Length: 232
Length: 406
Image 1 (cartoon, rainbow over the protein chains, first blue to last red):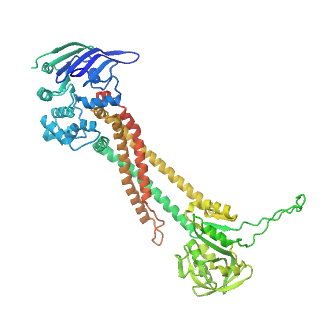
Image 2 (cartoon, rainbow over the protein chains, first blue to last red; image 1 turned 90 degrees about the horizontal axis):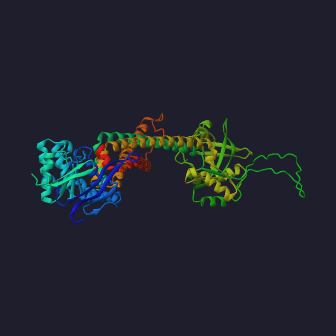
């Protein structure tokens, strides 16, 4: 599968048994290492369903999916969990940090989940990541003690804790003002350029999509356009 | 630290008020369990001690004489139409020395005392009292009854010329140590004994009736020379007395009455007390389990989104299961530690309040290490079991749904 971090072939997804609703109607998609792509589309077009399937949180009804070169069709739940932890980072619209943990512990969480236990060397790595998003001094703060933008930056640091080849971001700036949204976008772009991490960003914001290298347009469960552009 | 412990403790700390309340609930439950167990144990121990302070665990005696119907020798036809029940005379255990040796060698038996006993009359001046005469070996007798600790005057050294009597009898006869008493057995044999000591076994009837002399003296008075009428036995485990008695009967063919048979009512009362205490404890455990389970069920609902995120970040289902099981166990363990201390405190308080007229405690309440450990183990296991259902539902959460709906 070459250097693709993500490859979908003929992916269909239907819900319901008596009344079947087909949400994804044959998706073919390939995301290369280091790409910075936006997934756009109107509400109900299947973006979240597609992201859940790519994020290995849901399985396609039909079709093939490979993440970081690993075919997922035959993997059981534990196998999917392991691959998700190793190959994927998540950034959600509402940041979804664990409220009982400090910023540093939140960033450490994927490392702890991968190792199955806490370890001393995880903290410096987490602090270094927080420093890269400009939040070194907030390492011991709880999410409730931080602004929305700061929380989202912690979420980005968390998504990159295990240096995954692909980060999935679901409306990462949807809940932020324009200035903060720009900052968050900048942080993601920086990680993309410096570390070669591929980003697939679901967004409603055409301004943000235009600043990506590639825009994938999903309408009614089908990719209607997939164009590469020079980022602004 | 393993991830499940790390998150269990963080979740536990995060829901501080909830955690404190449920630990307090478990503590109260465990305190009730510990206090109630200690109270019932103390009460039962005290009752049993009072009963067995004046009674041997097992009394071995010859079987009752039975009149058989007379029959013709050839065709076994009954000659007499009616068989008269025979009166039971004082008889010795045949080969009692061997019986004593055999009993002493049994692993469950801790002391054996051959005894000659029978009715007699104690006379001093105008005062005459019906008594029970005991002829014993002082050393062996003292191992069956706590008589040496209960002497209030003189010493417990019954001989051929000195007897030991109870407090009430001494008062009735108006005698003290050194005074003379005439003992006359119902057969008419009579002798004069000096009072060598006065005991108080804590039972008026015993204090009023018992006259203890040396074996030979009693044998002469009761016309049972060289014999003993019974063998008294002390066993290691008092509630095994029935079993040991049955064993003795099987081995010797003699009648062996255990204290459990002669005090069947007391035993029934003790057993009913134990079962009511166990029932209370069962319902306390049930309430503790439901309390823990309900808190964790709410917690799983509250933390649905966080569980979804953890799963999205590669946390295994098994880990999620363990997070909640450990929380249940931690609640049980913490609650049992606090509860055991509370139970011990309640016990001490009760003991300081409930006192006899002379200021001594009514009965001892001992919170033993075994009781604390047992309660802690029960509470912890209950915590883990109570967490099983919520933990399972947490582990089964679909991460995509949990994140979307959480």
